[in-house]
Length: 365
Image 1: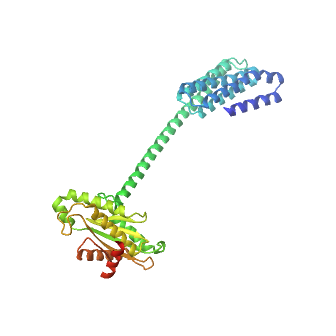
Image 2: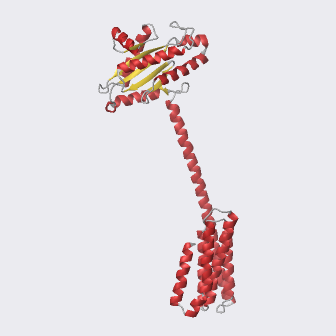
Image 3: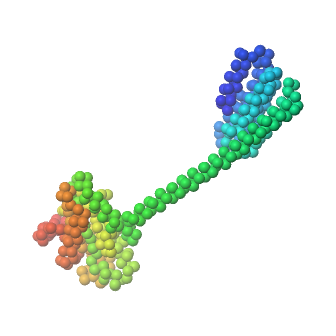
């Protein structure tokens, strides 16, 4: 509507310069209606208002603009009258194709355009009745075709919008489903910690990129002592609750964000400790073991203690040694086996002789 005002002012200015003075002055009064109508529509549509008000303002404003264009041609008289009727039809078609409004408003603009064209055409003394009717039907066909095209475009636009919404919803649902699947693929469903697959991938990644490690990589392999006896005495439901509590205690004992806990299988858990020395890993393992013993979870079938205890094997490799994930797991498993063989409920460091283990344990205490 701002451009309508600008074009109308330019048209009236050019008329004053190029047309005879009498015709140009006669066109000023009807031409002044166009800026008023366009400005009114602009001000009403600037803010959110009821749909009936917006539609009514646009329909009434467009009628006044079309009427003003016809009136300008009638005021100029002569051949200008028919030319301005053509301009009026063009303005009406522009409004039909431009405004994104309900079809009822579009039909109102089209009807106003054709009615004004016929009325002013019949009042033109230079055109006969048959010629006026023929011209009316010619332009009526064009306007009706534009209305149908506008309706088709509107339907296609709505379909495209709905399809885009549907595709967007499907993409969102697919993305969310993929996230859930990725989560399920990496997390143990019972304990909520990482599963063996994810932990193996992480170990392989660390072993394959030693340049990213600032120091040693340590691995704890933890096994609940006499867990089968717990299941036999208290039932598998109590055994599952025990696994959940033990996993939570291990996670609480590992405070660093770079450390990772996973359920290796059954009652076994792995803890990956990047950039952690053997001595530091041993202290962490002892803290885990003491926290679990301190929780005093019942295990009446255990031959170690009447409570749940845990044995831990610790293995450490330097970042530049060219170690493999399988080798580190084998070493932690060997240390765990020695812990079980020596009486369970203890921590054993792979490769450390008995005196060295005692010294480390005394330092942890």
